[in-house]
Image (cartoon, rainbow, N blue to C red; front, side):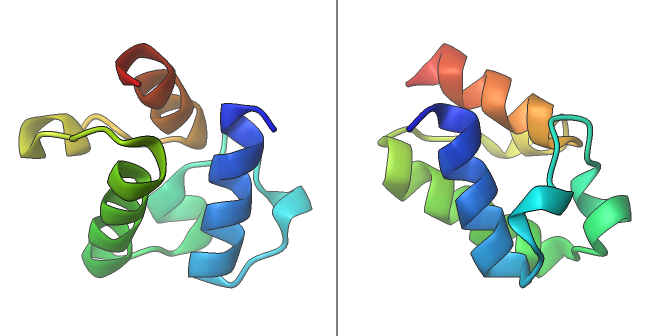
Length: 76
């Protein structure tokens, strides 16, 4: 399973949305109505799932699912 598929499955479960509605262009906050707690949960899960650490200053740059995928690919 590639990084996008893993992140899509994780987001679908955490945000209770259908996987097929999640694309690389999806904006996590706007398209999925996620709040700051959802983002914190997502970051913690990403760190556990991929064995990486995401600094606070990087979190604000993760707007779309594609941003998250690229960050994980470059840092894991």
